[in-house]
Length: 360
Image (tube, rainbow, N blue to C red; front, top):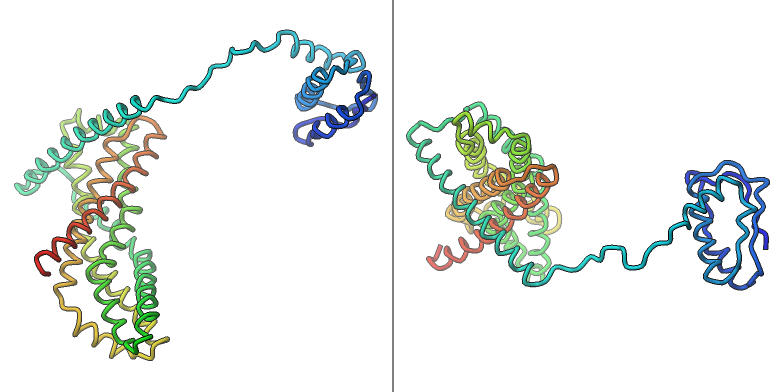
């Protein structure tokens, strides 16, 4: 069998798949294989890969290959390829980590995180007392900038999510209450859900993915660039100078964003009631005013303050805990978002259960 090689054989132009030719060799069982390279153009390692695969298949099928019919440069490269065969067992085997080793590593990591968290909380308390005494060292311009980033810059996404959540709550309530002719109680569902739960929680989740991740990335990048070490060398507390403006910014903006999210969610429910349930805006808002007292809105605002503290704390803690590489910054950002969302859900559950126990 003679194999004719013509044209350019390069990776960029595409190399034919040798599997079809190997199947033909296995079915034909030729006595030997030679090559016709008179029309062969330029070639690179793509041709060598093709030939090595083909020659190995011929050796397995006991078909001699006449390499003398190939160009001299290809013959030398093939000689180098097959000069020293690969030794069996020389590759390093990747063994899985034992279960006890995994448990030990997780335990050591949890212990390290716990110590870092206690140190961070202790420094945060010290910085809080310094702030109360008026001796905290941070710039108010940084505080105003962080308020702008966490507040007005987040209005668009908070508006979109809150309106959609209100629409979803109204749709869910209307699907069931319409069966009993109680469409007016959709206003109760939307008002109570947005005031107590969804307004604060959705705002907190948005800020966790937005501000919490930004805090972790900013402080993590400063850690990589050794700016945190420079603050410590100058005698400036990173907690006071970097963490407090971000923490205060979320404490100030989260209640305001929560009130705004409650209002936009109620507007979303009003749109559904007015377009699908033939309930006027006046009836809708009158029903909410009579059924949802201000205490429910106050509970949601209190939750928003707590959620803001958790988001800022988790983002800044993961940022200061960041390693010294670019991948560590990405891991710190991801960890900050996950930690914030978990803490938000746990805190919301604890607060809800506590309010039910004391009858609020």
